[in-house]
Amino acid sequence: MSVVERALVHALPLLPRATVRSFASPYIAGETLADACRVVEELNRSGKAATVDVLGEEVETLGEARALADAYVEVLDAVRERGLDAHVSVKPTGLGLEVDRELCRENVERLVRLAERDGSFVRIDMEDARTTDATLDLYRRLRADGLERVGVVLQARLRRTLDDIASLAPLAPNVRLCKGIYLEPPEVSFTRSSEIRAAFVRCAEALLESGAYVAFATHDDALIQEAKRLVARHRLPTERYEFQMLLGVRERAADALVREGHRVRVYVPFGERWYEYSLRRLRENPRVAARVTADVVRRIALPGAGR
Ligand SMILES: Cc1cc2nc3c(=O)[nH]c(=O)nc-3n(C[C@H](O)[C@H](O)[C@H](O)COP(=O)(O)OP(=O)(O)OC[C@H]3O[C@@H](n4cnc5c(N)ncnc54)[C@H](O)[C@@H]3O)c2cc1C
View 1 (cartoon, rainbow, N blue to C red):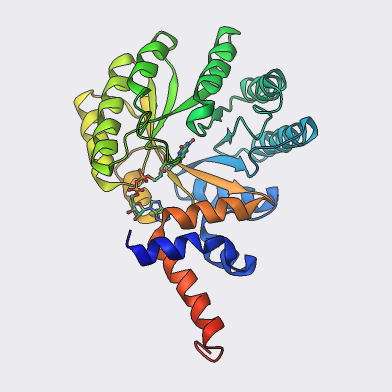
View 2 (cartoon, rainbow, N blue to C red; view 1 turned 135 degrees about the vertical axis):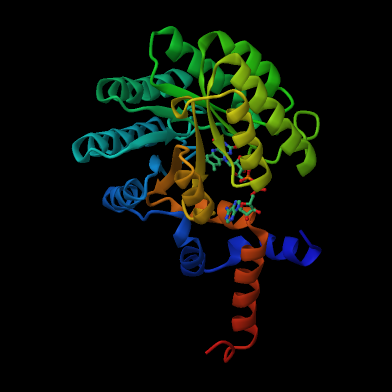
């Protein structure tokens, strides 16, 4: 990222919300459950499954955490009633991890029990490195209670991840493997993109060798090709792995994977808390973020421009 791009990305929070919204709209299904269902139906028609995320993280009260859990119950009910090919993805801090761990476990367990009833699935997203131990502990406790329709996320960026793969192996876990979105200090994480890529491949190999179900969550062509090579080498049937991508990102690559016969699942966020998620998406894509910010600055500096 150039210095100018970096400066423009830092200026993102100063942008008018309407501007952020218009540029972020491809990444978000909308504000309501009906919006999310419509998008999931479209994805299903194009041969893709979905995982639905109700936007909301780092809640500060028990009430907010319960309200988010209630919203997920509505999603699971809608998935069942409409026969959608969709799971849900939950953020532990959204369900109360930092308020009361026991309440968070209850909230997640409630959703996993519904998923068990309906043949659905709950993916516990992984947040920043301060929450890794608590999140893995939450996952282990649910599995120890006999719950199966729950999976976790591991971040290749973290130096600890190969050890986590080894310690989770006896559970034959269902793992989403991603690079990791949170920028962590070098003591705990790789920082160069070449190192993170290499770690992703090592983790993918270790997961496949350990018998885990692997969801390769990446838009990075080199890693998609590497994952395809690995599943071919391990002669994995399509029920043993999938590819995952974010809504609105590299849709043609997702279509190509579907045509080649791979299972593809798209992450579909929706909800009123779209602003924080949108900023994150724009930050991840500095070229777009820089273009958006530069455009707004130009319009403010030169009010006639662009009309
Ligand atoms: C389904 C899914 C679930 C995820 N869950 C988690 C999680 O629980 N915890 C976590 O820490 N991280 C999660 N992530 C984020 C992940 O860790 C990475 O930060 C993110 O996917 C970018 O890495 P990449 O592998 O796609 O490679 P990159 O090198 O970042 O991207 C490769 C290419 O894809 C395109 N691209 C990537 N992102 C965008 C974007 N936002 N907008 C437009 N184009 C883009 C660009 O063309 C880019 O060059 C998830 C990602 C996916 C796909």
